Image 1 (cartoon, rainbow, N blue to C red):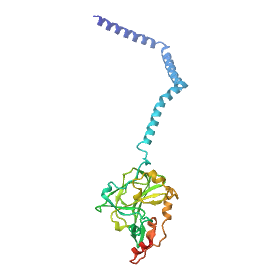
Image 2 (cartoon, rainbow, N blue to C red; image 1 turned 90 degrees about the vertical axis):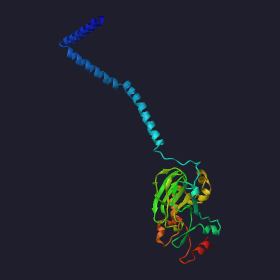
Image 3 (cartoon, rainbow, N blue to C red; image 1 turned 135 degrees about the vertical axis):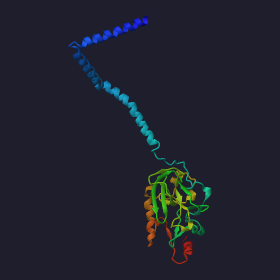
Image 4 (cartoon, one colour; image 1 turned 45 degrees about the horizontal axis):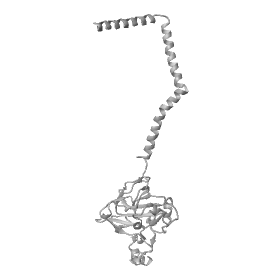
Length: 296
């Protein structure tokens, strides 16, 4: 009973309010007053937003969002978009997945080695003997194998040489560069930064060292001058970089050093990159091996 009476009272109150609003709206002053009230509200809101207090509040609201965006951008730069750098404690490794599955078939030419060892470190090409400035690696079964980065670094050169095969140079420190040639299916590009053990390409054949068959040629250079890779393996990059040695330039001058160290030759093939390999004199007769040994 009381609920019914309350509902009826509420209904009467609503009808009374509607009647009063209807009566006010018929007055001449009602609509101008409503219009002025709306204008006053809008103007007040506008000036509040434009005031220094309102501006400061808006800036405070935007600051956390901007700071968050800046942190996200910084995280992106330091994360996936950044390139890894070689650690000074990283040691130089043989550029293969598994050392047990490969053999070294060509050795670095050591000027202090015996004549027999020097003869084993020569490459015969186009009636000439060339000093081996690195090592040659072949699979035990003579099959192609994946060639990997000896250390973390930046790819500074990728080229396809008609005699040497595909060539990749990787810079590890200011003055240490490793070079990989006689490759196929190269997977990196100039400017890439790669980590130690990442695949660079596949061992293949080349014209320069036909007798080696499927192999990869690997060099280590300091200031553009060759080092014996066998002695450099398992050494820290900081140690290789700081050791006394051929301090006649820096890594950025490597290409100039490579261009200057070869002898001039009348063979057209010299223009394709063989200036990298100093020539030991030979002849066009069948006495090349004897001459090479004597000149060793």
